Every structure is written in C-alpha cells, then in structure tokens.
Length: 478
Ligand SMILES: Cc1ncc(COP(=O)(O)O)c(C=O)c1O
Image (cartoon, rainbow, N blue to C red; front, top):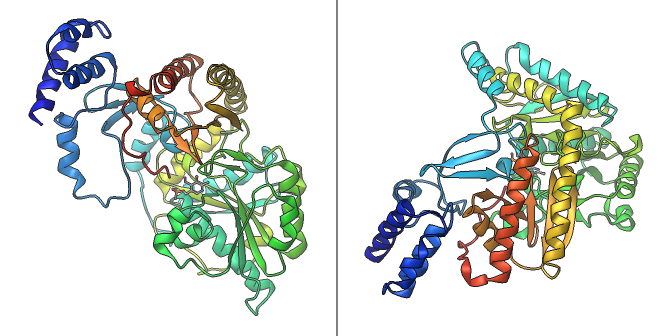
C-alpha cells in the first residue's frame, strides 16, 4: 500500500509536469525498482489508467461496496456524469461510450429534450397508480401500435401493456402466452414455452426459465415447469420442438447477450408458420435489438408478414435510461386477457410514459434510421481493417445496424481493459465476442475516434501482451 502510494504520487507528479508519453524517459533512467518504473510508465502513458487502490475513487468504492449485494464485478472508474456519447469519472477523466448502457441510451446520455420533459412532467404528475386514467399511458400505447404498423413490423399490433423493465415485459408475454394456451385448452396441457440456446430474456423466474444459460439458471433451479429449448436457426428442429402442447415461443430476432447472432429469415418464417399451425403465441424479444438499433423500428420489420409475431417485448431504449418496458400484443392475444389477470403498480406511470412517448417518436424517425445504416458501414469498414491486421484473432463480424459483434479467437477481457484505459468503453457478449451497441446518435468523428482506440488496444494486447494488465473478470452484462 505504501509503495502503491509512492507510485501514485510519483506518477501524478510525472504526469503533471510532463506531456503524455514523454514522461517516462527519466523514470526509466532512474534507480527506482522495476515494478515501480512499470507502474509509473503505465500511469503516465495512459489517458485513463484505472484508478489505483489508494485513489479517491478506490476510497469511495470501498466505502460503499460492503453495502451492495455483490451481483456485479465492476472495473474501478466511478462515473458521475455523461453527455451525448461521453461519460466522465469522478477523477474527471473522459470516456467515449460504445456501450450506451447496454443498448439503452440510444439518443445519447442526458438528452436535453428528455431532461426538460422530465422536469415538466415531474412538476405536473408522476404517479397515479393504474387505478386511474392519465393522459400518457394510453398515448404511448397508441403511438407504439401506430409506429409498429407504419414501420412494417407486426402488422396485427393492437394493444400494449406497459411495465418497468425488459424482464417484466417478457414475464408479461410469457403469462399472456400461458393464458392463451389455457383458453384454447382448458385442461392446461397446452402450457409449454419454447426458447433458444444462447438467448437472454431476463432474470425474473419466468424470463430466467426461458434463458437456458446454466450460469444464470443453476443457482436458482428448479426453473418453472414446461420450458423447452431449441437450437437457434435450426429449421429442421422446429417441428418436434413446437407442438400442440406449446402455448408460446420466445425468440430474439438478433441475440444480444448470446453473441450478436442474427436469426435467418427462413428460420423465422418457418417458426412463425409452425406457431400458427399449432396455435402457439410467437413472441419477438426486441428488448436489445429493437427501437431503431438495426436501422428499422424493429429488427424484424423487413420480414414478410408471415414471419410477424403475436407479441413484441421492448424496454432498454424505450426510456433512454429511464426504467420502462412494454409488451405489444395483437387482438388474438388481447382478447384472452381479462381485467385482473395481470397488473403493475408503477408500470405506465405518467412520467415514464411521457418520456417514452417522446423517445419512440424520435427513434422512429426515418432520418435517424438511415444514419444508423450509414454508421454501420463505417464500423464495418474499420472491422474489416482490424480483421486484416489481426487475421488470427478476428474470426468474424456479425450483426446489423448498430448492434454489431466482432468475434475473437481469444478472451477479449484484456482488450476491454486496454480500451477503457485509453478512454473507450466497450463490452463483451457470447463467447469471446466484442459487442458494439453505441448511442444511435454517435457521430462519424466519434466512431473514428473509438475505432482508433480499439485498434491501439488490440495492438497492445495481441502484439505486446505484457503491456496490459487485465482486470479480474468483466462485469455481468445484463
Ligand atoms: C434481449 C433481452 N431481453 C431481456 C432483457 C432483460 O431486460 P432487463 O435487464 O431490463 O430486465 C435483456 C437485457 O439485457 C435483453 O437483452
């Protein structure tokens, strides 16, 4: 600790009086121990080295950590403000954000229009409970239905249930599917739910039961009865998977957490046909891939009508950081739900729904969506160059719009650390995949800036592995 303090003081002094990258020559020539020299070199040559254990940040973190249920492992920087595509830590260091809070802040951080509306609505009406009408729950529901149909997605969209998170939107969808099954077959035999390997649908018991990842399920087993798991994009497996006993099938048109895997059009058409045949509700979980992220309002919007779902679940970007989720259903599903079947205290409150009403209108904008596709091309151009430079490391590029994955053949954790210490936030998913889900408003200049940092981080990690010290484990992403 004492040595660490000395190193920190020395490095602060060095970085105060010398320009970045120019400070280490005299240190290298000194008779300081090698470990101290290395630490100084790192802290003076990186714009955002992770705060050391005797920093102000570490003191703050350690003061608080003991009071938090340890569900996440977080790197040391502590963020206290953000604007657009940038975030600042408590030591006032700036980071470019390619994560958007896991595909949430699509309109950027602290959007001024949203801040203004939030103030206005918070000074007018925040919460009434769902026992009374307010102007915004219904307005948002109407807008979601209209924009969905207008965008070419789920042409039968008709009604919306508004809640507070992605898990809750899926929980509602699962319950609705069970209710449809029970209405069709009163014996209760039609209760099975189907989901797919590598999917992520949430952490509540229903949504977790649809998430066949042993890491998430095992600590809380047994899961709910009646859940079956199939292979993503396996058309041949559909018939035995989805049967007369199936009440619902839930699938992400693009798997986010599972590795940015895109469902093929043929697979979704075949799945939808099978659902119609056996009378099962088809649920598209668009929580991560929806709301403009693919350059269309919904990732499935370009599919032919025969592949459209009966339910869409959405959340994340719906509130641009304010908690809200929604379950969009068609008349077939809605007709099976009666008063008292389902509910929520906070869901659909006027504050959240007024914000989401503004956000949906802006994310549905054709100009924004066209720009998303242009930005995708810029990312892809850089990915191709990086792949050329690291052909053994980059084995694939996946995704659509601004939900993109760079498949590596090695553990990406050191790249995440090296990028963060150079001022870029990026996350992982699946197995060894780097995930790119930046704010949709990101500029070309910001993309260039981030890709230059990423390339440097890759070079440091894969050309000089000793030059970067990885943090232990990366945070759970969802
Ligand atoms: C596709 C998908 N579904 C559901 C969820 C769960 O959403 P939430 O964390 O808001 O409960 C997530 C979160 O990452 C997700 O990506």
